[in-house]
Image (cartoon, rainbow, N blue to C red):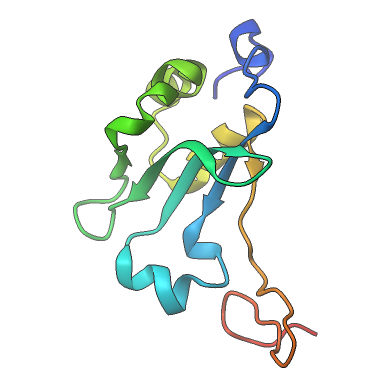
Length: 140
């Protein structure tokens, strides 16, 4: 794996008011009920989150192993997010070097670069509702 002590990696900084994050959608509490219908492939959404809300850009890395062949990872990005290609170039360079063939490998790479896992794995408590984990079981 790419050495996270590399100077280019240490320089990875989202700037004031932002944080680099990722969401593992297939591990989120809401996946089974909503996201799975829209995107049936396990995926990680990588984004530059604004601390005040929203994001500057985002892209998705999806696992198409079940549809195409084992180890098939796909990057999906809209043109409005192309700034990320230059802004977090060390991430894309590490992808090219390491060639992870699982989302766990992608997650390890993101973690090594200082991205924050923002996945909501437990349903938030709301008045009159029960908190559920990703399997739909109540959290005690």
